Length: 64
Image (cartoon, rainbow, N blue to C red):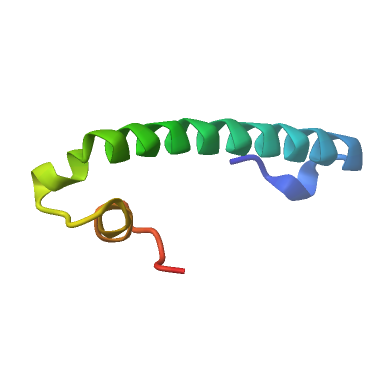
């Protein structure tokens, strides 16, 4: 990770914008995968009772 304190304000804003775009792309990829996991009920292969159960217990997301 870059040392953010050494960046100019413009560099910081540019990198922040790029990070946000990357995060949005990664989120879309994850949601697309989760949609397919749910359609196939693939979570059941590992004995999870639901997509929610899989996301919380296997992927480590918070219940909220």
